[in-house]
Amino acid sequence: MKAVIQRVRRTTLSVDGELISEIPFGLAVYLGIKNTDTVSECEIMAKKLEKLRIFEDENGKMNLSVADVGGEILLISQFTVYGDCSHGNRPSFTEAAPFREAALLYGYTGLKLQELGLTVKLGKFGADMKIEQFNDGPVTVIYEV
Image (cartoon, rainbow, N blue to C red; front, side, top):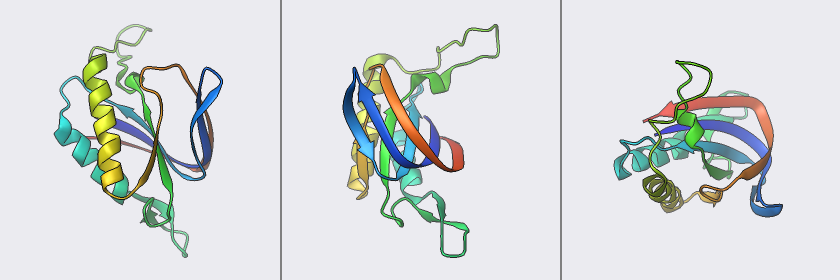
């Protein structure tokens, strides 16, 4: 499981012109599910996202988590995170989990985040999503379980 995590201000996600999800500030998390992932990786990922300290404290140091600042998480399914570009010019997605398994693990990760007390908004799994994102910093980190 791999996540591209971005600290954001207002971020919206639409499908077919309809607003599906929106957060005022927090984290936009592009979550890729690998073909070997299980619920264990979901639980590890959720705990990392809850505790990851990438928000600034009163001294300007990245010392606060999304929970500390009262931010929200927009969790976005993103199989292309597992795109392998090492051979040729068209990415291979053989490491990405099959649709059904990935959908279940994506949903489970969202549930685990909610169980940790975080406000989580979801995208629409498998849809052609349009995301308007206002990056903050910018701060972007990649985490892989």
